[in-house]
Each structure stands twice: as structure tokens, then as C-alpha cells.
Length: 290
Ligand SMILES: [Zn+2]
Image (cartoon, rainbow, N blue to C red; front, side, top):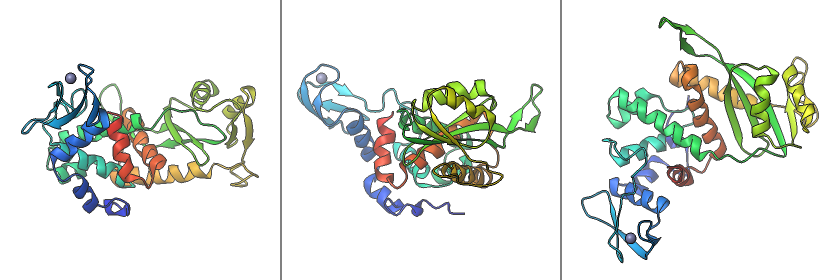
């Protein structure tokens, strides 16, 4: 299994340390993404340039003297973990195909397991925000699957529990993956109507719930997976490959994911799938979502 971040040729570990050699370089990046180094001061409205105040995590307006704290209101604000460590963690998340476990983060960043676990989830939430919200259109594949996981029952015992997940993938476009309670028609309907634009061509398998598509203005085609994988233009192969990658990675990297946290991992994997091969730009996207 490939786990090394060096698997992203466009932005190697060496490139990372060149672009973000220390905490100040990371702070400058946050400043640029959130406010810019030149422009209208967000406090007083004067047009100015900003320069770093030495020894502090802030910038000052050259013409107005206002102080700006680039990390204010972000996940970095009250963190004792150095900015460069945060950035390196983000790098691992966007450059590593199979994801990063809390154990790996703990080892790589030299923080406690608890801190590593929290950092991981905060980054996953950030990736969800950076993922975008525009509706899927054109030709869209929809497919459901079960992902294994553990869930605590009401007396604290863990038991294996499968989580139902619905995937929606625009051909040559964005992937959206949502945890759902079950695959009944009434459960899937609001999720699909909110995510896929009316009039889209939709490919699914034979699950009866998908017949709802025919009542809501979609051009619906089905594939009988007992007999074939492709039916003319209709197949769900893009989602099949995503399910394979996700399930193998969960087994290899995370072992088990509870239903409660499943959505965060799906956001992480769909973010990578949506922005593949643009690791360098992904930093701007992720930090822009702060
Ligand atoms: Zn000002």
C-alpha cells in the first residue's frame, strides 16, 4: 500500500519545506489568503500595505497602524501546536492517497494521541468546507454502499455496525458522498434533489428507490449489476472505484470508523478525489476555507 506523501510528484515533501520553511511562512500564507498583504484594512477601511510585527503572530497596517491577527477565528487560533506542524498535517492529508491515521500524525508531529486525533478531525472539517457546494449536473452516477464500522450501544458495548453511504458523482466533475440512515426512497429523495440538478442524466443500479428519479425530471438509466457493468452510456464505475479505495483505506489505515465520524472521513476522501493532482493549489483552497 502506498502511504508515502512523496507519491505526489507535483509537490514533494522537499517542496513543502521549501514553500513553508517555518511558522512565519505559514502565517504569511494565511494572511495572504484571508486578507492579502495589500488592500483595504478590514478594521478601518484605509487602503494600505501590511507588514509582519516581529516576534508576534500579527500584522500591522503601514498607513493606519491597525493590528491584524491572521489566525483569529480559525482552528489555529488557540492551538499550542506550531503552525508549521498544522501545515504539515494538512500536507499529509492532501498528498496521501489513503489518508492519515491519528497514530501516524502523533508520530510525525510529535504531539499526544489526543491532540493528533483532534487535529485530524479539524482538518477533515476544513476539507469539507473547501469541497464546494455547487449542484451536480450533466451526467451523474449515483450508487449506495455499506461501510463497516463500530458503534457503541446504550450500555457502552461496541458492536460492528454497517453504515449506509450514498455517492453522487458528476462525470468529469465533483463527487459528493453522504452518510444516510437507510436506502429507502423517502430517505434518499431529499439528498438527491438537493445535490443533483433537475434535468441531469443519472445512472444507477436496480435499487427500487432510484425510481423516484423518474418523477423529478431526471433522465434515468439503470444497470443490472448481476448481468453487466455497462449499459450504453450508463454505469457507476467511477463510484465503484471510489468505494474500493475508501474501503481498502479504512481497513489499511484506520481499521474501524464509527458511524458518528464516518462523514468526516468521506469528506476527506472526496476532497482528495475532487482536487487530485493539484496539491500545491490545495493549500490555498484549504486555507481559503478557514
Ligand atoms: Zn486600519
